Each structure stands twice: as structure tokens, then as C-alpha cells.
Image 1 (cartoon, rainbow over the protein chains, first blue to last red):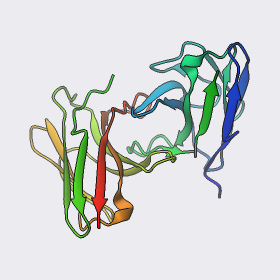
Image 2 (image 1 turned 90 degrees about the vertical axis):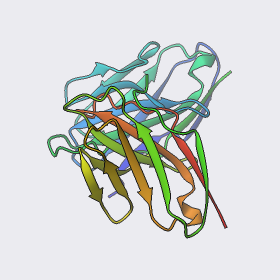
Image 3 (image 1 turned 60 degrees about the horizontal axis):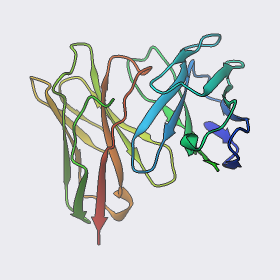
Image 4 (image 1 turned 120 degrees about the vertical axis):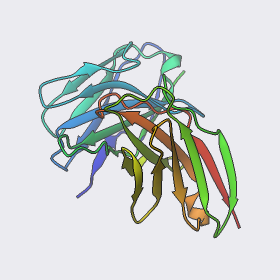
Length: 114
Length: 109
């Protein structure tokens, strides 16, 4: 049981390049999330997927797109990377309906845009 | 934007009890209060959640007064490995959890 896995762990992009961050969970969770964390700050929600087949914007969606490929996988795409998108990106998942707000987080992807 | 207010940092020594208080001045009736822990270079980890009164698990205790305008996370007998950032959150679903800057707890030997 690997929990939430993310690839890649590190990435350096040049301004204008595109890339996709991959996330997968093996806990049969319904909901999945993408966050970004800038140095010394808390996490900000980019997009979330409440269930397979649905996605919704979070607090900071501009410059990103997401795809809920299936129940296990939720990817985040940067179409044209900008230096302001330099951050650590965390994927998370949760099982809805239990009355708890326990999200399980992946190890993160450190992205630098030059 | 984060809806809660908590101290930026706290220092403690091994074996002491650490209490972190968070303000929930605009908490909604349906909101639960949840605390997460984050170690350097890792994603946050759920610690505890409550609605009112006191909740205890194997890691921590959570105290919520009757007016629910604040919450206090209590970490008993901390060790060096408890050095981390602690976040308090409020919400009625986990689609819109808002993490503020958190409280950096440093435990010294």
C-alpha cells in the first residue's frame, strides 16, 4: 500500500515550457486534490476532484489544468510555465462520507521555473 | 485566504507539554476544526479533528470551548521529532480546506 505517489520528485523548466505532474493513490479514495506551497507559506488549493469525472477550481487555478484520468489518478498540467509557478506541489486524496476531513498527502514535487 | 489565526512560532524542550491555540473568530455552525502536522520536505499529516469539547487520540488532545471561537492543540511530552509546522483549519467539507502559515514548533534538547 503505497498511499499517494507523485512523479517527478524534482523538475526544472524554462519559462514557456509545459509539463504534467502525475499523482496516483491506491486507497480507493473518492476525492483528490492539488496544492502548491511557496516558501514559508501554507498550502493553497489549485484544483480538486470530488469524485471520478468531476473537477473544480480551488483558490489559485490560473495557469493550471487538471485531469481526473480514473479513480486512482489525478494529473496537473502547466501549459506555459512561469517563474511565479516555482513551488512545491502536493497531491492529496480523501475518502468522503466518513465525517472526517483527513486528507492523505504525497511527498511533493519541487518545481523550479527559470 | 486562511480563516484562522495562530502564533507564528513556539519553542519548547523535550518532555514538556506544548499547547498551540488557534482563533476561529468567524467559524460557521457546520464547520469542524482540524489540525495537521508538516515535517520539512513532506506533505501535511492529519493529527486530530473535533467539533466541540475535548477530543483525544494517541498523538494529541484537542480542546474546543463552548463558543468555538478558539481551539487548543495539546502535545504531551514532546520530543525532538515533534519539531514541525502545525496548521489549524476549519471547514464543513474537505474540498476547501484553507491552510494558513501555521505554527512552527521547535523542540530543543
